[in-house]
Amino acid sequence: MHTYQATDNYLKNKTILVTGAGDGIGKEAALQYGKYGATVILLGKTVAKLESVYDEIIALGGPEPAIVPLDLKGATSQHYRDMANTIGDQFGCLDGLLHNASLLGHLGPFTQISENDWQNVFQVNLTSQFLMTQALIPILKKAPNASVIFTTSSVGITGRAYWGPYAISKFATQGMMQVLADEYDNSSIRFNSLNPGATRTLMRSKAYPAENPESLKTPAEIMPLYLYLMGNESSEENGQTFHAQPK
Image 1 (tube, rainbow, N blue to C red):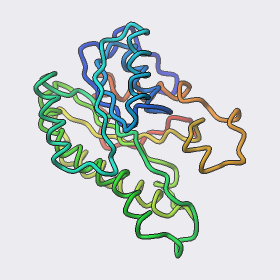
Image 2: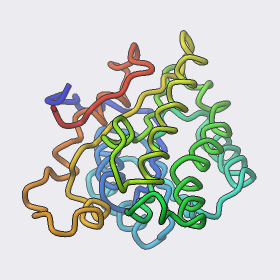
Image 3: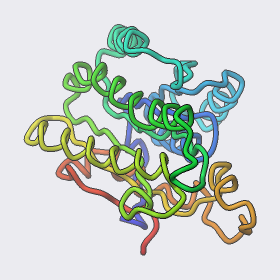
Image 4: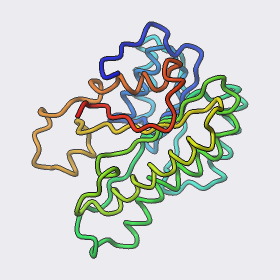
């Protein structure tokens, strides 16, 4: 799966929503999904970045994307219900959802975690995913073969000192994925988690400022599993945690 090669038009006629689509892994996933034929819904908080990704998808010959400017930190359940209704009206169903957007928060001792930082990290990394998924399930159910991918982390599988809210939020994300996978087992929706591993992104540079970015894989290099899990060839995968980089 780490060397998976999608065929031309692998995602044709699919509509896929990507959060955090303005840069990093979300941007690359959106570009790849568009390249392989999907209509991509680009969700992020910075319109200029989303417009740039939009232009790149068009340049690649992909279907015209849609843009949803939304700051997950301040979004409410009504925002997600309105978004779901709009997607349903425009596209009929939703074939894929990549929960990519995350907030790193403050890294430091547990006793120094502020309530504000805790609330912000959990709002973006967990609550927004809960509310968004809940709102989108009705239109995901309308797709013949829908895939929802949650983004996890090594620190959400084995806890690590000083990673506080981020690590704990990723443990909770794992739990949410497993609950949904079990609840929708034998349905047309599957739920899995994907750990991108150490990747050359802005978030990684904030967490490891002294690290040489050239030693890390680029987002483009870890895309095989992102493609595999979003296409029909992974239709039997449910409730699993995948690692984009071999251990």
